[in-house]
Length: 163
Image (tube, rainbow, N blue to C red; front, top):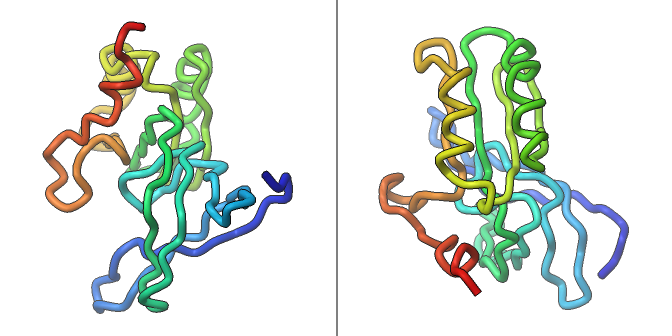
């Protein structure tokens, strides 16, 4: 694996005018031309920090990816009406105690990565204690089917299986 970090662009959806939107992601390039995400994406669904993907360039306007291997991390996105700094101050220490990281902080968005072994219940308890649903909401970025947004992907079943 190469240790040098690179930036890739992946299709994240379309804007209100129907134009493609891409998200720039920092990655480590592997010897087999796959890449490992350094941080969880803000808008691309289905992947998280540490996941290995292979870029699919069939449509240059909408560069996609194939998932090669999951890291076991959950991607958590927190959207805010007001400045996210206060939420970051409240959430980051609690997420970090569980081994999670703040991957991205912008004025109205926070993105965290945390390993699924920390437990959905514990993670959701922390998020629900800070996000009120009116001024701030949170979503998993890689737990539900990217198309319907409701069907659990269940990729964590094998990771959480007792040995």
